[in-house]
Image (cartoon, rainbow, N blue to C red; front, side):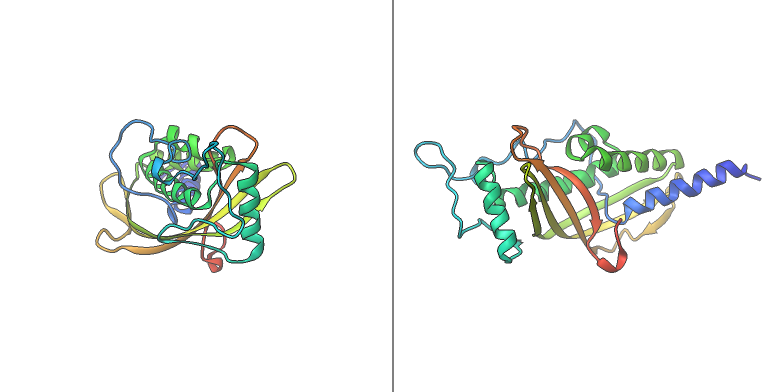
Length: 231
């Protein structure tokens, strides 16, 4: 018979792991720390500048690339505009493109147990939860196989800017993923290797706009279905 403390630990570990598994994970090759998309943005989609090198900002126009939408409420639009005034490098379209890449990288890194990459993208309190779940998964001898087939939409649903220029932007991701959990013997505990599920997740990204650090850190990860509650 297993000791009672071991049984209790196993239960806690499983709960932590499945809590994060509901929304995270992809199958990726191991390698060096992945690039941070908020630091290394593609040149072709960086904000436009004028001849003096100043960022061009239009109050009536927010760049929206394919598969991206922005809440049309005036409050969201105005807040995004104010962010662009404070941070001359901020562009809503570029931000969402970077957020999509960050979402993919975090999912991959969680599945790989890549703590270094996660620490570079997650706020400290979020990183602690992810680290704990990874440790619990490792101790249980379980593995996660996840493949993001596509991210069909990335929508800005809210934007908040406080008096200290701390900005928070919430993005709803709709993705198609194949997710499987296996035990140490390779037996599938949850998921289907032949079936892709459409998932909706809402993540919040935060940044001090006056800080020269270009990174927007993931400050909250939440299931986008209100009926399920927070992850």
